[in-house]
Image (cartoon, rainbow, N blue to C red):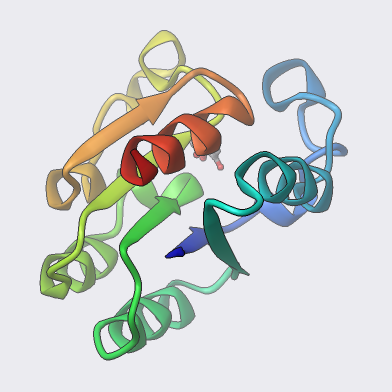
Length: 141
Ligand code: DQA
């Protein structure tokens, strides 16, 4: 069975409470359960969330020596700013897909720069929780 690491960055632990008109009313835990359920028997998902840039960098680095088929990352606000996360992603040899719940290009201009995405093989943005599911599915089949 394929194994994926799914990293969520800052403020994604506040999903459900945070700007529900943009991000929806479901918590990260609910999205995790929904996604796990949908890929049951096809993929094993390991979820990680941190609000701290350095911790995310360290988790990406340790993924280098672990056996994952792909990495899915929602860097949150770090998507627009983090050279460090970008550089860590570049170390990996597996497919890396960046996901966003919201359609970032329809939002504020500062969200139009996707710095970490330059180190990713694909981007999925604007499908809500389906962004995760579509990204994972693309690596199962
Ligand atoms: C987000 C979009 C980012 O611009 C924002 O900072 C987030 C969430 C998304 O999933 O739509 O924290 O990554």
